[in-house]
Image (cartoon, rainbow, N blue to C red; front, side, top):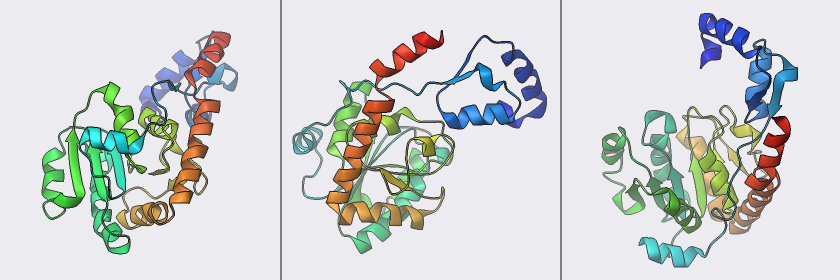
Length: 245
């Protein structure tokens, strides 16, 4: 945000260029800072670390029964604050198109926020196909992730969200938007699908192939787990932080 306010950024840039080291959690943000005048030599990219002993594949059907979720249809999961920028309304707008082209699914939204009343109005005619799970404790998030078949993050604005990395660590294919740092971890067509923000039709088109081809979904999920293991495992990230310091 500071980079978009010239007066504020000029002050921050002078201060930050006097630092001994600057750590960015994605190459996307490093490139933004460099383009705005930061010294390339000061910047080291260190991705967020994920605890793979917490976020790991678990038995799907066991968790669905534990969470009271159906076992007879695919589950599309979104996790995040119920705010305008998270784009939940575009997922809900895409749902009728998904139901028409595929059949019964369940959209589960985990999170709470000021946008809940608006979402409740949107799902008046979609109640059998949407479950608002509300706020859930952090230690249960791996259970919700592993109960799902597809993770969707239709955000209009993001950094490099940890929940996306956590979903990938749980072997989930992802459908999300190419905003900010997300394209640094999701390659369209390889480990998920990137769709334009704010476009429900495109979101439906991104979700549909994963519903129609479970083998594709499984392959993308496994690719995601391998990528997190290589690039975001907390045990791999900490030594790089220590080296930087």
